[in-house]
Image (cartoon, rainbow, N blue to C red; front, side):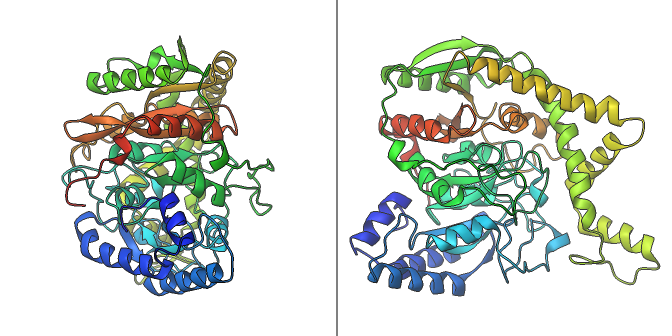
Length: 483
């Protein structure tokens, strides 16, 4: 049963081939057996999962149906879950149990999804390798000596290892798409505002967006359907109708205009990945797509702009973790200043401290105009580049990452080298666009992803293209050895 996709699980439950309770018990046993190798979970919620599975079976027995009714999933551990530890991968929140459910958690629970647990992640979603977690690094199931990508690496590793069919993630600069590429999954970052951020502990509020991680575009469509929609509790949520994503999967690609930015194929891209991307383009051309070269001239400024804006927002968002109201508090503080300093110094890891300091500096008097304001102007130029490109093409295609997964610890001494791995993904967050990564092949036995970007609220177009591609390729069906 562990090899079934979400879509296959929905059909199996509808046909009464197995129950949600049977499936849940099977997957919980598999997690107990295999996850010690991966470290992909922070918390397991066995009692809740079995309770939800039994409730889902009862609902089906009463005639209810639904693609997520009885389907097992997991949540990245920054989605608040009532009464369950929500740690953000940090010592700072190791003892925090959320008093409410995030909107995403509540919506998926209402649809009948079964929560198996909370997945490991880079601390406060800051990282590209899932090595900054207080609970230890997550391992890539394709090679346990390599990273799975971050910050949603726990969700990605768990799904790739067939511990469960799908999981939620969040994407601030590529944190769904990048681990999807490095673990042979399909991962989707929706348009900013498409999925509620209420109850999703913030890293950078103008960039964060929740989305699905699964093996296929079809499964991402099912999970996104349950996650998306307007939320009056979230001031950044957009009141836009949610289409039937599954119904749009089978549209023809005849005449689809695909743009390939010339800036993507620079010296920083592994030439073997470049070849796989070109092979993907040829596959889509066979399906009727028309391909043309385009330009995104301000892409070169994306990384410096992102690494000013995101840390600036992080320094503001994380100021609430002060050792006073909730979270970690140091032992025997001498006074209030000592309480603040030691609680934050002991509670936050090195990467989080680094980004808070960068952000506080960029926002400080005398530097705001030189750094933060200028970065926001560059952000607008990057958005304008995309708007101009989408006047010519329907989607933009390129690599998701410049390299396959690197070895654990290989970039720990050089944070900037890890930041450069986000070069293709962060522009979508700066512009607020939807982006998807899908499996496109392997380099040295490690997975490679191809990225698709579309205009605002065109997630259905991305899912349609990815689904048609996956009907004609088998990269997404490959399973890591031993899992």
